[in-house]
Length: 426
Image (cartoon, rainbow, N blue to C red; front, side, top):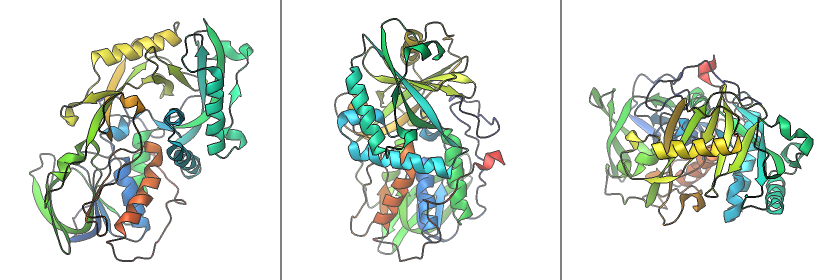
């Protein structure tokens, strides 16, 4: 089942390749207003999600994006709207439950952007996770999703194995099939921003956050508009600012007075490759030799394989897939699909933000962290981590915290009911 394009092909040919349609159709607002209730720094999925939540709650809000919407991590993900089946192994039950609820909601709100997709798990003699463990995990996954027919799993009969896109059958013991979601992450980001703009939110890009000063009444903010961050400098005020800059979030904190303590995180690089030919049946959830899970997925007429996980300490603007990552993903693909063309025709890498820790990134918590400068009267709130699937729930949580500072307003909409459309598809 191929994931259809959600918009005309507007892929930016850059060092990121065709990670997503990153050309934004959302129009940048003409003039920065003298005051906003909420000023969001960062035009990724979490930044636009907060903007939508704030605008729906009746607040004035603006988003500052230094390049274009979804230019960073939000166009370089695995394009999945899912509960996170593997998070059950680390007992992150509440995260999986929330993500599955958000997945089902997005199927309703964005049917042209988020599609239910079949996922297949081949279980081999060499697979570390035993079939009964897999089945137990899928049963829990289905129950957490509500247990309806379209959330259940099955064992694929051997008579159907030949139809599974050329999956290697040597040593194959079982094939399990369940349901999750797939999306165009950049298009979804644009759609959420469009929803926020329809509710009155402003968007500015290219807009570089320069510095901010917190005082008793709010925050004074300086912004540089233009590609070179020096074309035009403007000032505004905000009741609160939301730091949704992803891998650049600690840099944003360093520009705020009084001094803000950096949050202890690691930037984790994840690479993807694309190979020729479409996968027809759905997505595949396969185990690499190092026991990590890798996805093999249809993507706009090609096959996408990802992702890797390695700590990244360099400039986030310079992240790129490494030769060893490309080779690793190519080997995984060739092992499981030996008769398919494994020529790498495109590759890219993105960064996810995880709590600082020793040990494998694969096993770290994916819970979103929302530190503030003051828990009882926050003027700044930062978003560290988070999943694409949970952006809307994160926006709700952020607004719940910010309302400790913001004046009461009458909501004008609910993000649980707002349909989403990609403006680039008009």
